[in-house]
Image 1 (spheres, helix red, strand yellow):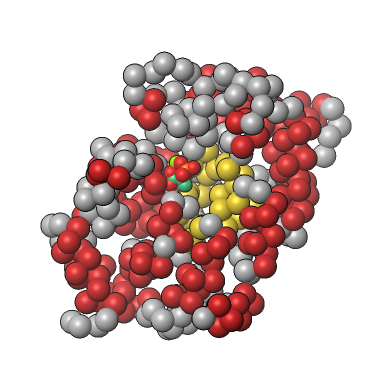
Image 2 (cartoon, rainbow, N blue to C red):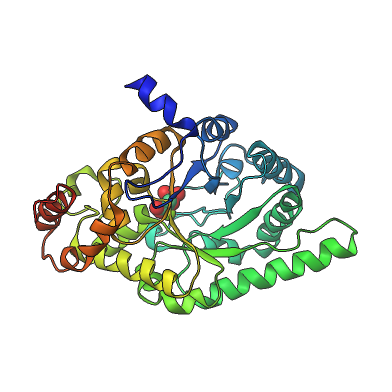
Length: 326
Ligand code: PEP
Ligand code: MG
């Protein structure tokens, strides 16, 4: 089995009916980057930058961040990488004490872009480091915990200001740097068309989106019967976001855990997704699964799946669709 999978490292990521799918890696360390390359990832779809802030008490300097981002870009050898701006707060309290402490509901508090925008000097240091690293290869920037357009507008403004600053300092700048919103807040998902106006691409963070849609902590095992990606309300919301991206002709990827879970590959294809970002250890498994699936057949049953009333019905119907018992 291991040897059969290993052979897939250089194989295309393609469905049984010949549709090419983009398989990206979620990466944090150099080991992840090496694994992503070895498994034939099409790029990095989520580079979490929090680790730079969690280890020591001092905030990471611009050069320290630049070095990490440039190593990532160079490590991927010209393939596109997606750097997520610092997603601190909630469960990720940084050692320097930037994240707000003592909030009553930290998951609903000042986290992600909300926190970054309250510390424009710290945020701009990260933005400068990203802009400098983006001269070494194709980079996209992903903004976590976006709720409404003014946040994307504010981030764009900070990027513009950082560009002007770097230009004055005669530092090389990338020609373009696509900016995307993570869709992980229900309001962002429901009002996604507004965010698409200010985003070059989207990435759906299903770990958090499911938690907020279902009001169930993503890490609470007691809520397993509720925290289920097959919940009809969640499926309809995912479908809404993916369809809106397709209509706007902007790339939509998905970087939550379900992207790397072969039990959900058929579901995500059925919903129209064609960019999956996952832990690099999952890439061969998902590529293997893709080759067994007929995307056109799955797509034909999307409307039917979106009409179910319970996650149990969704699971049963999805099985029937995949096994063509219809
Ligand atoms: C998500 O919320 O789905 C996600 C990918 O981000 P994180 O797990 O880092 O919150
Ligand atoms: Mg998240």
